[in-house]
Image (tube, rainbow over all chains, first blue to last red; front, top):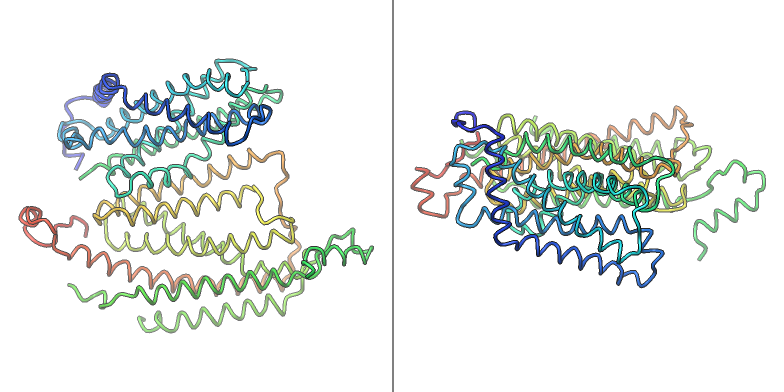
Length: 233
Length: 62
Length: 237
């Protein structure tokens, strides 16, 4: 039981230590980042092939395609994030160390957020070039949506990746669980991105960003509360 | 074969007084389809419950 | 009591449901605007109601399981999710058929319809997860977490889709309900409810028997057997 376990170090310290460890592993190999970048680029390219060279159509739907590419890439990234721990039974080692289980959630979810945000930053220029869009309102708005969207995909994604990484057929299970869940996030992020790219005469951006923020609050909270139950043994 | 919607339009066109109210005439085919599908699904589910019924009584242990 | 549930409840359910549908299909007058097509209401609305009841049971049971683990709660969760999925699917199909003559299309991206479609996908995922996890304790805990998160998502989906489609007027059926219609609807709903309760009881018993068989099964690995010191190493009551 987690309550009887001694907790000599604080939640924040443990989170930062675990996050540092994950980022270090990621930096040394860069395998995950490279893989998802190429995957997302290929997805963006595939959308233009699937639709044919209709630039107007691509321009109109650019926000949606951008977020779909990030969503598909996020499934790969999330699945990988727990595969690292299943090698050499690392998860057992972390659990045996007197670290709060919630710190594992926070570190993994923050790590995934950083990864997806980095991916998004790299994809924006590609999207601008490939789909012929331009940023109409402001780059700050786009950055905000990118951050909020990555946070929104990471919190439930981390919970479900922890579950599916221990189940059979994990590659099928993660998208099956995650996709219906992130529909509100995907919808609002794509809508807000479209507003950034095509102008926002009605000032709807704030309400979509607000919806995304609310989604984040709920799922970071729920994940924080429920994650210890998933990895308890 | 005349589909239900064209039949509906024809009836609406034939009776000018009814057009404004927009009342749908006929459509029993849709009704029977709904009840039929529901009954079929419920029967199939009941059969599946019968097939998967516990072999031994549940309170056999302890 | 056992005998009543086995034979009396389904008989009662079928009689009440048949009475309700007879009232709806024959006795009640056609709707002023939708005509006879409106009679779909007596099958569609009860299905949606009992599907909601089943999903609500699933949510409550999932929370209870995380508070106090028991195989009974886990079996109830499995039963309610599966039956909710079956009834909800039937409800959505009948709704789509109803939509064809009234809205002109089978499917519209209206918030209720979209949320329900997402709900069905969510609970399909839930049942698939249950299939893919062998350890009964992990399966019970994880599926409870997934059920809670999935249920929390539904109101968010509803709001976001409503915003998303804000340019379109939300289709709603005019409420010109005669007292005959209300009676037919109520009787049908009770019939469907009794049928659902009977399904739930049967499925619950089956799931519980399955769990007990799983837990009683000796572990395959000899090391586990030695460590557990017996066949039943379960922490769950």
